[in-house]
Length: 391
Ligand SMILES: *Cc1c(COP(=O)(O)O)cnc(C)c1O
Image 1 (cartoon, rainbow, N blue to C red):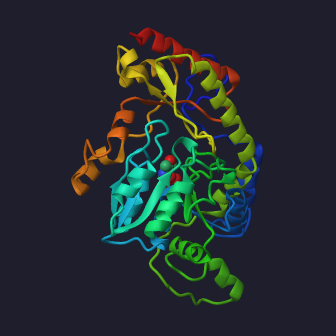
Image 2 (cartoon, rainbow, N blue to C red; image 1 turned 90 degrees about the vertical axis):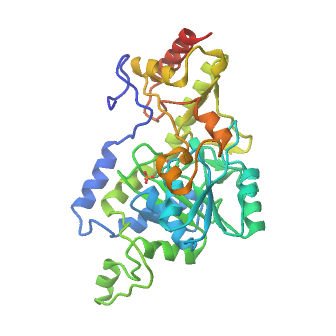
């Protein structure tokens, strides 16, 4: 499903990166330079990213998963601790707590946005709760004022899994500045890409320092620092991993970051067009948007109104795929995966709102390079398939 769009019949994927000549040139320039990994481009990218995210510090790492893991480590999450996460997310959100020996505790989502329900977060807090990870599902920021108030009152850390929401705003403030630590992904389907990569942002210099050592084996100086100081001496001051990102990747990330605003605007335009075209269709309902949110639309998710259909979501999915529309499903709830069932005894019934939503959700294609004709074609096929399947 990697064919460029514009064709009337080629399959349209649900998401796709955009690479232009300037991206290629930026990468080639680094390939010809002295540093391939941790050189001058990593900090340059971090400064630019912190600017876009409205935070004092940004630490770039090898993936969004590494970013979440770094956040858990820096906050001191460990064995015996609990970390509250929503089930409608990519599994890394919960895995990062498990990496640290902690227990993920599922809090259900709100039915209209599929964002974590602050009231259920509060219900799930115990004396062992160390952190809550809010997921800006589909690119819609969570209610950070309410979550922050709850976290503050209970003395726990608020972390944002902002892997969907780079470019989004909450009450005018950019995502990346709304929680103690925010984690981003630079995977090709996300807002901007570095091939693979991730970033953590924070205003806390101590956390930033811990996270930057964590990505480099817990070592106090990088190879480049040692070179500059003419010394072989370094100290391992903490446990760490090799979660480094390369200068090659950061060159791509930096070049992509310049396009973020334009791309976010295009994503919003496409979402508005879908809203208009699907508005009068009784068989689907888009996710709700809160008045204080300016979403980034990483995903455009609709909920099927199953009682109006003769078929289930699987059949709608297959019929759209057969027509070349690369619909997808985000996500199978975390607590229904075999690993979580076996290790933590989770299963159906734990988060009824998420489980009901999971049966009905469908992600429609949305990425900045889609043409207006692509958008019309997707909406047209959705209307046709739902017409075929209507009761
Ligand atoms: C993509 C994603 C991640 C993981 O990012 P990677 O870069 O693929 O490791 C984590 N959480 C969410 C919500 C994501 O969408």
